[in-house]
Amino acid sequence: MRIGVFTVLFQKLSFEEVLDRALAAGVTAVEIGSGGYPGNHHCPVEELLADAGKRKQYQHALASRGLILSALSCHYEPLHPDPRIAQESRDVFNKSVRLAQMLDVPVVNVLSGTPGGSPTDTMPNWVTCAWPPHYLEILDYQWNQVGIPYFQEAASFAQQHHVKIGVEMHPGMLIYNVETLLRMREAAGPALGCNFDPSHLFWNGVDPVAAIRKLGDAIVHVHGKDVYVDPYNVSVNGCNDHKPYGQIPKRSWTFRSIGYGHDAKTWKDIISALRIIGYDYVISIEHEDAMMSNDEGLAKGIALLKEACIFEPAGELFWA
Image (tube, rainbow, N blue to C red; front, side, top):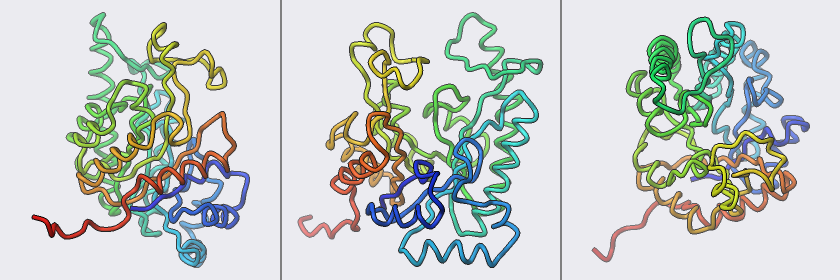
């Protein structure tokens, strides 16, 4: 198992400066944005697709520092009812998959996005309730006419290029929990997997260990990110919260550095559950803690993961 970092937190630095910063911080893997919401600050996708020499230089910059590229990430809106946004998202994904194959990167991370509620809608519509009955009509449209057809096509494209899709379960999206992830995987096939981010599950009341055990080999990449759930605010308004992230005292939950939302034992349980299902890849730290600097948040996250992660193969059962 490796500890990595999602380099979007250092987007103002150049590619090689980021690699040096990651190496100095003590990680052995980087996850890099290839477009969409993360941007492509450290991945000139068009140049790399077009030039084998530049790809070789890019790979050498990583390998010479003992780093691996764990995933390309292009979280965006492929199901958006605006055809322009949807097509841009799909183009970014397709280019990311092609480049991932060329760079020997096994995973491209995405968000599912959210369709509109009907073919005439112009904005996404996230359904969270089964009643009134028109919500079920919306879900039928979103899944059967938009979501499943797209992800069947996307998963087929990824499989052709020997790449896995890591869908990050995220509230507000069509795929936001274990049930919706597995439903789409059943429809689209095993090339569609999960980029497991426990932070989005904690504040919905999900036990990440139970989620990991249920997902099993659907997990193809993991984010290291924590969240603090404010018991006072939750007791008043529940967990769903659309107040701006900066209003921390008023919010029901807030993204935190690893260990500042849940203790080391919780993270050790998460790591152990990942080992049980056979996951032995990267825990990629995604820093989004508004109460810490990038450097301090990353350093504290690395320190806790070094304590929690299991790096060596299991020993012989000499006692049994």
